[in-house]
Length: 193
Image 1 (cartoon, one colour):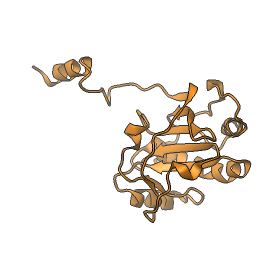
Image 2 (cartoon, rainbow, N blue to C red):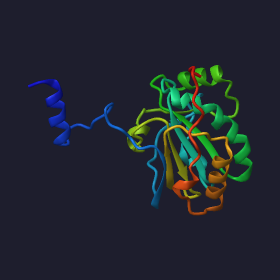
Image 3 (cartoon, helix red, strand yellow):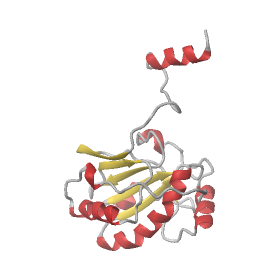
Image 4 (cartoon, rainbow, N blue to C red):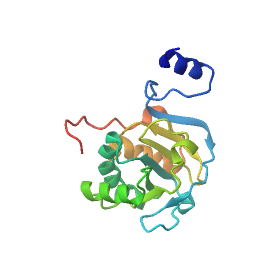
């Protein structure tokens, strides 16, 4: 039996999930009902606890990224610019690094990109992608004041544009979100960030 036939058979039987060949739909997906978010062991660059409970009482944007993911790295500067604009209005921004290297990968990427506003947050046990059901990176969770996920954006976005500001303001006000509120994808670049 050829390897391809074996993999197709295993996937059809539900024994493995397709990965690289699978196409994942991107954009803003609004949930019918707020969904609880699983607790994770999130740490800062000093190894101190910095989990989702630190966001309690405020709506939040939680971006899952990795330094090896070019679209993730490309959108980090926009998230860095969004943070000081939207946090005074009542929302929190967390960029959660899923690198195997932990805080080292995040600190090095932030230094290379000149990131000044985003704090380092790492998934200490490297389980966030699986636990939070993120099929691709970047994936961004939009959470309400009670810490429930109300929507998610799959793929890269222009987080510092007017559409993202309007989306975040609607989240802050507790308004119903809809897919038409999605920020556009970032402008195409010809070089790696």
